[in-house]
Image 1: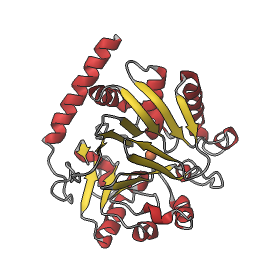
Image 2: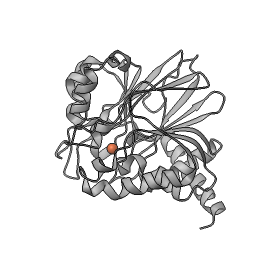
Image 3: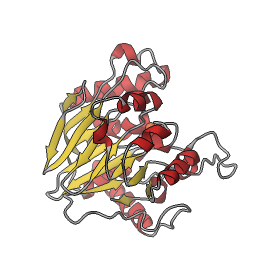
Image 4: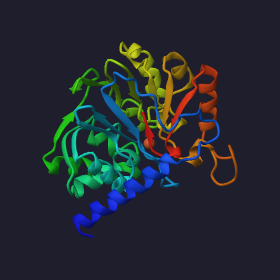
Length: 310
Ligand SMILES: [Fe+2]
């Protein structure tokens, strides 16, 4: 397919899925208004949680647009979601000011890796990530070694500015929207190693805030709770760790003050249903949902439902 045809196909896919999202039926357990958020009037950014339309996968993909038109991407999802994202970014002008990567699992870097190999019209100014050391990724998760290696090599080849982050604290201001790195890789954790090395990012302006936990696991969550930055995790919108299950623990969620959940969660995972019925699978999503009920969180944005505008 030529580049022009690919862009046209991407736009068609974007428009078609967007239209589906607008007409989406509300999932059980979701509060009214879940697909469209309550953007505060004075907020300087729009945030989209991209839909998960590949039923067997669980991507993680968020796009920001500031009121002056600057675009920022968080992760980007699976390789199979790249063409949807390409269409989405084309509609926004194809120029990405900043791209934040939580960790190099394929459901987080896959789409970006496709763009690095075949950029098309997309221009990316800066990628921010907390790269795993070669020694670490050669050792901890052999199945993920090759894609990690390929992704890091592709990043170096492109000429895109890459910021390697080794300590929390960096802030990036884009049109008076602030992105702050609250946590970085933790190579002391060799259990659930990649997930526990999720780079955590907080985003805010004068009106509202969101925290993106990536796939942070129990160990990273405990470390965060003991860190001097923990107060900064309080926010309006909290991205549920590891797609809503088997991430940070109940104590973490109870200790953070937040008002709404962002769930990068497909339907089968939302319902813990591998095809044998509700809550019959091996995943803990229903339990996490119960934790949220206990805390009193009423607003949920679930990627299974379609494109969420926040
Ligand atoms: Fe993930």
